Length: 447
Ligand code: UD1
Image (tube, rainbow, N blue to C red; front, side, top):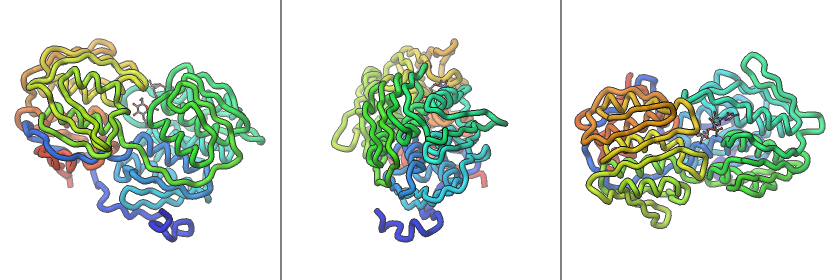
């Protein structure tokens, strides 16, 4: 790995990724629906893992290397911007990213960078653990609910941090002797809080136990990388994670797991459009709760080596009920896509969202395309229609945006999805990947 970046430690940050997406807020995607999908779609590394792994690199002064990294995503670029601001040297080439945090210059994560993406709150735990101080702006991200960070703050306080909130910033200081291991019981399951606390605890004095921890595969992947860096962690994938603090961590090389949400999105796309699609470098075991629902709806999914093969079993998909839950339950990040599928299924399906309170923003847009969806509180009844009709629609958050793309793939006529910059946050080359398997899809630049 080192040879990829021979002048790495001495040099300045360098970005050699070929043609990163240049997009404006006004770019659109146009789709003419009705094409079957056939062929191969490569699955990228998991965004929600990569963003946290980058923060983990702050825990050591040695270089860390990640491959299978979704480097062209807008969220990844935001995280690079933040880490470089802190003083990290970063090099990227193709799907490899190398980070060296030996020369951190500031412990302040400013509003202008953090507001773009919630994943940036994950610098808080590592900075505090390694340097004893951090000042991080309260984060932004998708507008899918209030999304507080109280669990992150309370957990760090239990590790001994003194935290104050000042003018929109979380100002955190560790005691002189460093963070101290503690027994932390989360009142609510949180992916981000589990990750922040797990990272902070790696360098704390003594043992930390995280109870009611989140069990998402991305957390286990982060934990595995931390273990390679010298951390002592057990219980990954269970609701009790135990971390024995160590004095320091070392550099490492880690290959980022496949993106299970991108995988699920393309499974649903193939099921809706028909045809046979092979998803390359994908893992169905991370989607076990979704698998049963897909099968019930009439989508056949089969693991073959490192690939997943998707086809539709029936001429028309069937309505199915889903309820989002923390892992291993049905992921909230696939709710909008599944709902897009239900709009054209035979019969009705009920969708219940239990994680975020404002995650039905795709509903009015899908209804503009002829869907029949009624919401009440955190549930939606989707009555399948024979055909959706192409329309101008507006993307409002990352997963809502991709749900509109899926609807466009099967709608009669042309669908124009506006404000696709949300998509650029989380889907690498979606136009190229869907176009490559036969979709009539193009990106229209506003320039
Ligand atoms: C992560 C994912 C996001 C996914 C979500 C749930 C990243 C970058 N994002 O977000 O794509 O939809 O997990 O699977 O990995 N909460 C609190 N207090 C807190 C923290 C969270 O009340 O301090 C609440 C949230 O508002 C939400 C619920 O807990 O209602 C779950 O949120 P959490 O699991 O923390 O999601 P994120 O880590 O933000």
